[in-house]
Length: 149
Image 1: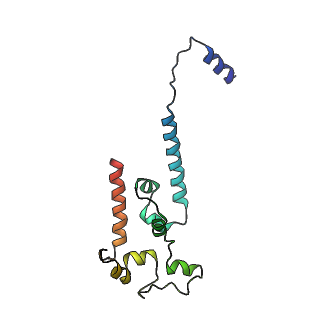
Image 2: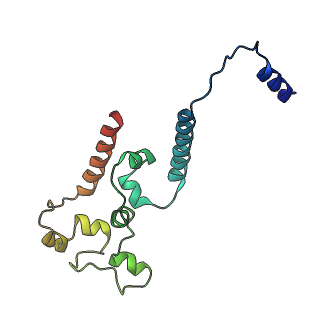
Image 3: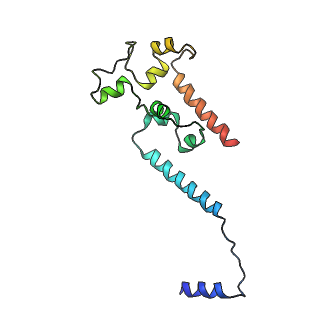
């Protein structure tokens, strides 16, 4: 029945066009928005990716960040880099200790606590207890600033 009415309406020259064509850009935008909503749902339900979620609490935070995701940056953000702690999980290292002997060699340790890293990278600022928290806040602030542009 609906098909017959649609065909009749399409063939009729007396029918007023109430509806306009939907621009393809609107279709793409709606599909992208729906994809982001689905991604966000999966992101919230995921029990993994805690390291990455510290940097990007929401999907939109990640989308707004204009960093090129290289394999090295992905390793840092995900905590899956070539560190002793990570390799020890798979029995590829005898232990997870860092060469500085002040903790396990995780990405967080290397970036924010390791004295050996500080010696090698003198241009880094001296880390504090809340350096990671500050870095996460800076990323979020940058994302919010991009939102208003």
